[in-house]
Image 1 (cartoon, one colour):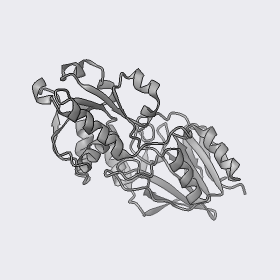
Image 2 (cartoon, rainbow, N blue to C red; image 1 turned 90 degrees about the vertical axis):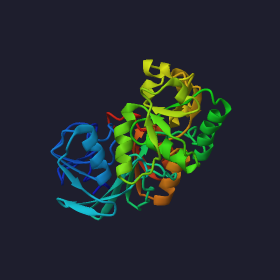
Image 3 (cartoon, one colour; image 1 turned 30 degrees about the vertical axis):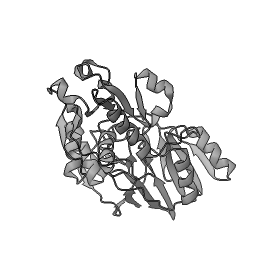
Image 4 (cartoon, rainbow, N blue to C red; image 1 turned 60 degrees about the vertical axis):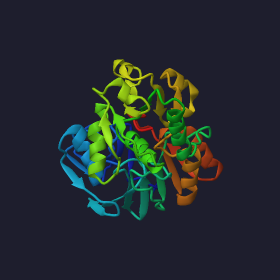
Length: 331
Protein backbone atom coordinates (compact mmCIF):
# COMPACT_ATOMS: atom_id res chain seq x y z
CA UNK A 1 0.00 0.00 0.00
CA UNK A 2 1.28 3.46 -0.88
CA UNK A 3 2.23 5.51 2.15
CA UNK A 4 -0.68 7.72 3.18
CA UNK A 5 -3.07 6.24 0.61
CA UNK A 6 -5.92 6.49 3.13
CA UNK A 7 -5.73 10.28 3.00
CA UNK A 8 -6.87 12.19 -0.09
CA UNK A 9 -5.57 15.69 -0.85
CA UNK A 10 -8.22 17.69 -2.69
CA UNK A 11 -8.30 21.34 -3.81
CA UNK A 12 -11.01 21.87 -1.15
CA UNK A 13 -8.95 20.39 1.69
CA UNK A 14 -7.64 17.05 2.94
CA UNK A 15 -10.22 14.28 2.93
CA UNK A 16 -10.26 11.17 5.11
CA UNK A 17 -12.57 8.74 3.27
CA UNK A 18 -12.62 6.12 6.04
CA UNK A 19 -13.87 8.75 8.51
CA UNK A 20 -15.85 10.80 5.98
CA UNK A 21 -14.15 13.89 7.42
CA UNK A 22 -12.18 16.82 6.03
CA UNK A 23 -9.27 18.77 7.46
CA UNK A 24 -9.60 22.56 6.99
CA UNK A 25 -12.14 22.30 4.16
CA UNK A 26 -12.75 25.41 2.07
CA UNK A 27 -16.43 24.52 1.67
CA UNK A 28 -19.14 23.44 4.14
CA UNK A 29 -18.93 19.70 4.84
CA UNK A 30 -20.66 17.22 7.14
CA UNK A 31 -17.56 16.60 9.29
CA UNK A 32 -14.70 19.08 9.62
CA UNK A 33 -11.45 18.89 11.57
CA UNK A 34 -10.09 22.42 11.96
CA UNK A 35 -6.47 23.26 12.74
CA UNK A 36 -7.01 26.90 13.76
CA UNK A 37 -9.35 29.84 13.53
CA UNK A 38 -8.02 31.90 10.62
CA UNK A 39 -10.60 32.33 7.90
CA UNK A 40 -8.53 30.56 5.26
CA UNK A 41 -8.64 27.38 7.37
CA UNK A 42 -11.84 27.72 9.41
CA UNK A 43 -15.14 28.42 7.72
CA UNK A 44 -18.68 28.27 9.01
CA UNK A 45 -21.52 26.06 7.88
CA UNK A 46 -20.14 22.60 8.71
CA UNK A 47 -22.36 19.87 10.10
CA UNK A 48 -19.91 18.91 12.86
CA UNK A 49 -16.59 20.49 13.83
CA UNK A 50 -13.71 18.95 15.79
CA UNK A 51 -11.20 21.51 17.07
CA UNK A 52 -9.51 22.76 20.22
CA UNK A 53 -11.52 24.87 22.68
CA UNK A 54 -9.66 28.01 21.58
CA UNK A 55 -10.39 27.42 17.91
CA UNK A 56 -14.05 26.69 18.57
CA UNK A 57 -14.31 29.93 20.57
CA UNK A 58 -12.77 31.88 17.68
CA UNK A 59 -15.12 30.25 15.18
CA UNK A 60 -18.11 31.06 17.38
CA UNK A 61 -16.99 34.70 17.58
CA UNK A 62 -16.65 34.91 13.82
CA UNK A 63 -19.44 32.69 12.51
CA UNK A 64 -21.82 32.19 15.41
CA UNK A 65 -22.37 29.01 17.43
CA UNK A 66 -20.86 25.86 15.93
CA UNK A 67 -21.87 22.23 16.30
CA UNK A 68 -18.48 21.79 17.90
CA UNK A 69 -16.70 18.83 19.45
CA UNK A 70 -13.95 20.17 21.68
CA UNK A 71 -10.64 18.28 21.70
CA UNK A 72 -7.89 19.35 24.10
CA UNK A 73 -4.19 19.23 23.31
CA UNK A 74 -2.90 15.71 23.86
CA UNK A 75 -6.38 14.21 23.58
CA UNK A 76 -7.36 11.74 20.85
CA UNK A 77 -10.71 10.80 19.37
CA UNK A 78 -11.78 7.98 17.09
CA UNK A 79 -13.40 8.83 13.76
CA UNK A 80 -14.21 5.52 12.13
CA UNK A 81 -10.98 3.51 12.03
CA UNK A 82 -8.77 6.62 12.30
CA UNK A 83 -7.39 7.93 15.58
CA UNK A 84 -7.26 11.73 15.51
CA UNK A 85 -5.20 13.76 17.97
CA UNK A 86 -4.45 17.44 18.44
CA UNK A 87 -1.06 18.86 19.50
CA UNK A 88 0.05 22.51 19.66
CA UNK A 89 1.16 24.28 16.48
CA UNK A 90 2.38 27.54 18.04
CA UNK A 91 0.60 29.64 15.41
CA UNK A 92 -2.24 31.44 17.22
CA UNK A 93 -4.53 30.79 20.18
CA UNK A 94 -5.91 27.25 19.91
CA UNK A 95 -3.88 26.31 16.83
CA UNK A 96 -3.17 22.62 16.47
CA UNK A 97 -1.45 20.05 14.35
CA UNK A 98 -3.68 17.11 13.53
CA UNK A 99 -2.10 13.71 14.28
CA UNK A 100 -3.66 10.85 12.32
CA UNK A 101 -2.99 7.18 13.14
CA UNK A 102 -4.31 4.46 10.86
CA UNK A 103 -3.12 1.30 9.11
CA UNK A 104 0.14 1.30 11.03
CA UNK A 105 1.05 4.78 9.79
CA UNK A 106 1.14 8.19 11.39
CA UNK A 107 0.47 11.36 9.40
CA UNK A 108 0.83 14.80 10.96
CA UNK A 109 -0.96 17.70 9.28
CA UNK A 110 0.76 20.81 10.59
CA UNK A 111 -1.76 23.45 9.60
CA UNK A 112 0.06 26.76 10.04
CA UNK A 113 2.86 26.77 12.59
CA UNK A 114 5.89 28.58 13.92
CA UNK A 115 8.77 27.54 16.16
CA UNK A 116 9.46 30.83 17.95
CA UNK A 117 8.19 31.63 21.43
CA UNK A 118 4.89 33.50 21.48
CA UNK A 119 3.30 34.66 24.75
CA UNK A 120 -0.20 34.30 23.29
CA UNK A 121 -0.26 30.60 22.40
CA UNK A 122 1.08 27.17 23.31
CA UNK A 123 4.43 26.35 21.64
CA UNK A 124 4.78 23.96 18.71
CA UNK A 125 5.16 20.34 19.76
CA UNK A 126 7.19 18.14 17.39
CA UNK A 127 5.66 14.72 16.70
CA UNK A 128 7.58 11.99 14.87
CA UNK A 129 5.61 10.67 11.92
CA UNK A 130 5.71 8.77 8.64
CA UNK A 131 4.27 11.65 6.61
CA UNK A 132 4.56 15.30 7.56
CA UNK A 133 2.13 17.62 5.78
CA UNK A 134 3.76 21.02 6.18
CA UNK A 135 2.84 24.55 5.26
CA UNK A 136 5.34 26.59 3.25
CA UNK A 137 4.07 30.17 3.46
CA UNK A 138 7.65 31.40 3.79
CA UNK A 139 9.22 28.44 2.03
CA UNK A 140 12.05 30.28 0.30
CA UNK A 141 15.61 30.76 1.63
CA UNK A 142 15.21 34.54 1.45
CA UNK A 143 12.70 34.38 4.30
CA UNK A 144 14.68 34.33 7.52
CA UNK A 145 12.80 36.20 10.22
CA UNK A 146 14.77 38.47 12.58
CA UNK A 147 14.57 38.20 16.34
CA UNK A 148 11.19 39.26 17.69
CA UNK A 149 12.76 41.49 20.34
CA UNK A 150 14.67 43.42 17.66
CA UNK A 151 11.46 44.22 15.80
CA UNK A 152 9.61 45.28 18.95
CA UNK A 153 12.58 47.44 19.91
CA UNK A 154 12.32 49.17 16.51
CA UNK A 155 8.73 50.03 17.35
CA UNK A 156 9.60 51.38 20.79
CA UNK A 157 12.56 53.33 19.42
CA UNK A 158 10.33 55.05 16.86
CA UNK A 159 7.95 56.04 19.63
CA UNK A 160 10.77 57.49 21.75
CA UNK A 161 12.38 59.32 18.83
CA UNK A 162 9.25 61.22 17.77
CA UNK A 163 7.03 61.57 20.84
CA UNK A 164 4.81 64.18 19.20
CA UNK A 165 3.61 61.53 16.73
CA UNK A 166 1.89 58.20 17.29
CA UNK A 167 2.87 54.81 15.91
CA UNK A 168 0.03 53.17 14.01
CA UNK A 169 0.62 49.43 13.62
CA UNK A 170 -1.32 47.44 11.05
CA UNK A 171 -1.87 43.94 12.41
CA UNK A 172 -4.31 41.20 11.52
CA UNK A 173 -7.21 40.95 13.93
CA UNK A 174 -6.65 37.33 14.94
CA UNK A 175 -3.28 36.45 16.37
CA UNK A 176 -0.99 39.17 15.11
CA UNK A 177 -2.62 42.07 16.96
CA UNK A 178 -2.64 40.17 20.25
CA UNK A 179 0.93 39.01 19.76
CA UNK A 180 2.21 42.54 19.10
CA UNK A 181 0.51 43.71 22.29
CA UNK A 182 1.84 40.79 24.34
CA UNK A 183 5.37 41.20 22.97
CA UNK A 184 5.29 44.89 23.89
CA UNK A 185 4.25 43.95 27.42
CA UNK A 186 7.06 41.41 27.59
CA UNK A 187 9.50 44.20 26.72
CA UNK A 188 8.24 46.22 29.70
CA UNK A 189 5.89 48.58 27.86
CA UNK A 190 3.06 49.16 30.32
CA UNK A 191 1.38 52.25 28.83
CA UNK A 192 -2.18 51.95 27.55
CA UNK A 193 -2.34 50.65 23.99
CA UNK A 194 -5.09 52.01 21.78
CA UNK A 195 -6.92 49.71 19.39
CA UNK A 196 -9.29 50.02 16.45
CA UNK A 197 -12.79 48.77 17.19
CA UNK A 198 -12.38 45.85 14.78
CA UNK A 199 -9.75 44.34 17.09
CA UNK A 200 -11.73 44.56 20.32
CA UNK A 201 -13.74 41.33 20.20
CA UNK A 202 -10.78 39.06 19.54
CA UNK A 203 -8.60 40.87 22.08
CA UNK A 204 -11.37 40.27 24.62
CA UNK A 205 -11.50 36.60 23.61
CA UNK A 206 -7.75 36.22 24.16
CA UNK A 207 -8.05 37.78 27.60
CA UNK A 208 -10.90 35.40 28.43
CA UNK A 209 -8.53 32.54 27.55
CA UNK A 210 -5.89 33.77 29.96
CA UNK A 211 -3.67 35.88 27.70
CA UNK A 212 -2.60 39.06 29.51
CA UNK A 213 -2.74 42.11 27.24
CA UNK A 214 -2.61 44.92 29.79
CA UNK A 215 -4.66 48.09 29.48
CA UNK A 216 -6.33 48.50 26.09
CA UNK A 217 -8.32 51.56 25.13
CA UNK A 218 -10.50 52.29 22.11
CA UNK A 219 -8.77 54.60 19.64
CA UNK A 220 -12.00 55.96 18.19
CA UNK A 221 -13.40 59.15 19.69
CA UNK A 222 -10.17 60.11 21.46
CA UNK A 223 -8.76 63.63 21.17
CA UNK A 224 -5.79 63.88 18.82
CA UNK A 225 -3.59 65.36 21.55
CA UNK A 226 -4.18 62.36 23.79
CA UNK A 227 -2.85 60.02 21.11
CA UNK A 228 0.52 61.73 20.77
CA UNK A 229 3.29 59.38 21.86
CA UNK A 230 0.93 56.40 21.84
CA UNK A 231 0.90 53.03 20.12
CA UNK A 232 -2.27 52.34 18.17
CA UNK A 233 -3.19 49.04 16.52
CA UNK A 234 -5.58 48.67 13.61
CA UNK A 235 -6.39 46.16 10.86
CA UNK A 236 -4.09 46.54 7.84
CA UNK A 237 -6.96 47.93 5.78
CA UNK A 238 -7.31 50.90 8.13
CA UNK A 239 -3.70 52.08 7.82
CA UNK A 240 -4.42 54.51 5.01
CA UNK A 241 -8.16 55.09 5.17
CA UNK A 242 -10.23 57.97 6.58
CA UNK A 243 -10.08 56.51 10.08
CA UNK A 244 -6.32 57.01 10.32
CA UNK A 245 -6.35 60.63 9.08
CA UNK A 246 -7.56 61.92 12.44
CA UNK A 247 -4.44 60.61 14.21
CA UNK A 248 -1.47 62.83 15.17
CA UNK A 249 0.94 62.44 12.22
CA UNK A 250 1.15 58.65 12.55
CA UNK A 251 4.31 56.68 11.92
CA UNK A 252 2.76 53.95 9.81
CA UNK A 253 3.97 50.46 10.71
CA UNK A 254 2.94 46.99 9.61
CA UNK A 255 3.62 43.75 11.49
CA UNK A 256 3.98 40.91 9.00
CA UNK A 257 6.46 38.39 7.72
CA UNK A 258 5.85 39.91 4.29
CA UNK A 259 7.56 43.10 5.42
CA UNK A 260 10.77 41.32 4.44
CA UNK A 261 9.69 42.17 0.87
CA UNK A 262 10.27 45.89 0.40
CA UNK A 263 7.73 46.15 -2.40
CA UNK A 264 5.00 44.97 -0.03
CA UNK A 265 5.91 47.71 2.43
CA UNK A 266 5.90 50.34 -0.31
CA UNK A 267 2.52 49.16 -1.59
CA UNK A 268 0.99 49.87 1.82
CA UNK A 269 2.90 53.14 2.36
CA UNK A 270 4.56 51.61 5.41
CA UNK A 271 7.17 53.82 7.05
CA UNK A 272 8.18 51.27 9.70
CA UNK A 273 8.10 47.66 8.47
CA UNK A 274 8.09 45.16 11.34
CA UNK A 275 9.07 41.65 10.25
CA UNK A 276 6.95 39.72 12.71
CA UNK A 277 5.47 36.47 11.44
CA UNK A 278 3.29 33.74 12.87
CA UNK A 279 4.64 31.25 10.32
CA UNK A 280 7.87 29.28 10.30
CA UNK A 281 10.63 30.81 8.21
CA UNK A 282 12.88 28.83 5.86
CA UNK A 283 15.29 27.70 8.58
CA UNK A 284 12.46 26.66 10.88
CA UNK A 285 10.71 24.73 8.12
CA UNK A 286 13.83 22.77 7.23
CA UNK A 287 14.86 22.26 10.86
CA UNK A 288 11.43 20.86 11.65
CA UNK A 289 11.63 18.35 8.81
CA UNK A 290 15.09 17.27 9.96
CA UNK A 291 13.84 16.90 13.54
CA UNK A 292 10.77 14.85 12.64
CA UNK A 293 12.62 12.69 10.08
CA UNK A 294 9.46 11.65 8.20
CA UNK A 295 9.55 9.12 5.38
CA UNK A 296 7.65 11.57 3.19
CA UNK A 297 6.91 15.30 3.23
CA UNK A 298 3.83 16.79 1.61
CA UNK A 299 4.05 20.55 1.12
CA UNK A 300 1.22 23.04 0.81
CA UNK A 301 0.04 26.60 1.50
CA UNK A 302 2.79 28.63 -0.08
CA UNK A 303 6.12 28.27 -1.86
CA UNK A 304 6.05 24.51 -2.26
CA UNK A 305 8.65 23.96 -4.98
CA UNK A 306 11.71 25.15 -3.07
CA UNK A 307 10.93 23.03 -0.03
CA UNK A 308 10.17 19.96 -2.16
CA UNK A 309 13.52 20.46 -3.91
CA UNK A 310 15.32 20.81 -0.55
CA UNK A 311 13.79 17.52 0.62
CA UNK A 312 14.69 15.63 -2.53
CA UNK A 313 18.30 16.80 -2.35
CA UNK A 314 18.39 15.06 1.04
CA UNK A 315 16.79 11.86 -0.24
CA UNK A 316 13.47 12.64 1.45
CA UNK A 317 10.46 11.82 -0.69
CA UNK A 318 8.39 14.97 -1.13
CA UNK A 319 5.55 16.34 -3.19
CA UNK A 320 3.46 19.48 -3.42
CA UNK A 321 -0.27 19.40 -2.72
CA UNK A 322 -2.71 21.50 -4.68
CA UNK A 323 -4.99 22.98 -2.04
CA UNK A 324 -7.04 26.02 -2.99
CA UNK A 325 -8.40 28.99 -1.10
CA UNK A 326 -5.56 29.77 1.29
CA UNK A 327 -4.68 33.40 1.93
CA UNK A 328 -2.20 35.34 4.05
CA UNK A 329 -4.61 36.67 6.67
CA UNK A 330 -2.32 35.27 9.33
CA UNK A 331 1.19 36.06 8.14
